[in-house]
Amino acid sequence: MTRRICAAAATALHVFILASGADAFVPAETKFAHTLATSTGTTCRTSGRRTTSLASAEVSVDPKEAVKLFGRLAEKYIMLDDSGGMCCYSACSDCEFRLPDGGYKMADQSAARPKWIPVYEHRVFETLGKEHASKWSTEIFAEGPAVSKDEFVAKVTNELAYAPSLGGPYLSASGAAIEDDKLVGKLFDLLAGDKEKLTKHRMSTRMKEIAGEEEALTWPTFLSALEEYM
Figure 1 (spheres, rainbow, N blue to C red):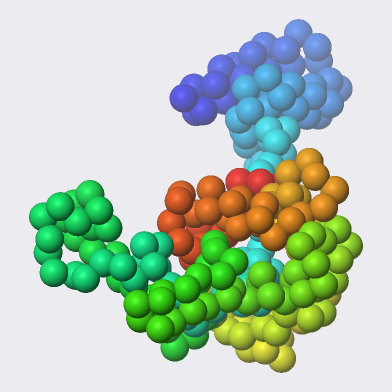
Figure 2: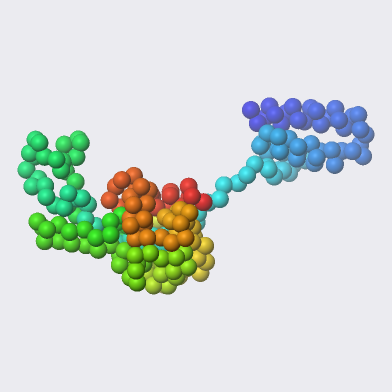
């Protein structure tokens, strides 16, 4: 399709040149190619050079910058069974805690490196004698149930320890300093919406939405959410 458009452009340009004279060649070519790119969003070659399309370019998120955030929020351990470990895993036919396909949700999981950002604030499995408070809930909201954008950015940038995560480009701790906090601010906007402050409850429920009602954000979901928001 693009070749046909460019061929038609070349024909029209040739007719224009014959009608206008040799002196009109250079500016006519440039102006015509520019007009074509504007109206069609295509890019044609003229005089051996590629003209710049005026179609809008998508803003992308640098994975190396995004992983600096993920490595500060993600954890090695997560409690996945939101039933609180109440399932006995005995294949009971009428068990309310089994998955729709008949399978089981693992009670908890561990990884060698941070892999999950839990969507919950705090979870207890009394029957298993286990409990877990998410890193983000205890460290970002250490002073209270809500933070402003400036407070959120300062906490994530300066106070949350970074560790190389599972997923995303590998960055050592020494190379993971956040020098530009713009993306941290975008993460706040993604979570807080139009609110001036982000509450602990809001962050939990918003991450749950982003995770598709799963129990954690993983690297692909985290990066995708940032890219879609940008």
